[in-house]
Image (cartoon, rainbow, N blue to C red; front, side):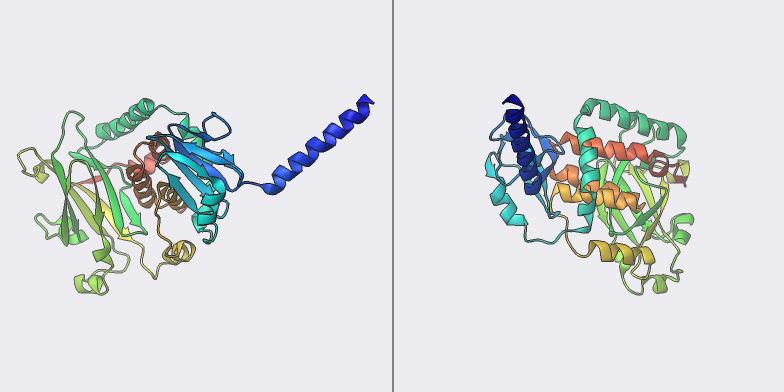
Length: 333
């Protein structure tokens, strides 16, 4: 009789597995922070955990749960409470899947690695990276950017630091110039931005104005220049003749560019709304080789969910992967 009992038990187990597999999952956890677990278990939900329609999740105070639906839509939970997965699914399941949803498995894998990292270790990694640049540069300022900046989206996130580790500037002046004016002493700027502190975003959409290049007498592929000058504590700019300013070339992809058309068709006009959206877009831009766009997306994700250390760790992993491209020696004026 025992062999028959074992056979029946095996068949029932197999059928149970088939039912679960057929049911699949509604959401996958992309990132979490704090006290987040299923109602039926006290085990924390980590990146990669799957949630079925029968599950309920408990989110504690000061906690965060970032999910991606099987359709590719994302959702964030920041308020404490108990949430029905079936109800959450009903809110997002009608939306169409986005191009960036193709990167879910890759991003979940990156988040799983990032969640195991220590934030203090990541800070030391960052200091080691910037320290190597500080020793290499001759000027007073550097940006966490490629020397040749190429952008799809007309916004640029600037993360700036003094090349002298013992120096702290009040802020930075960022001038957008033509190549001619950048090389000429005292050349006019098309637009000037002031970054207070060491981080900020600038809007470069004015460079897309129709007729601007023709008005300035520029070729279609001729880059603009970004000149960054540190501002001293006394509100005076550092002496550029003493190596105070750094220059980066700047090019926005134009509608006539093949790469622009490809990205425009793939991304469409679907906006990024959650930190998870930005993390997925960062992976997309990384694959396209648009590192400045990817960095901006990482920083937007961190801005939207600063408590999620995994986002900061994922950004540092990205910087390490592309350190030579992102932290190249900048042209000095």
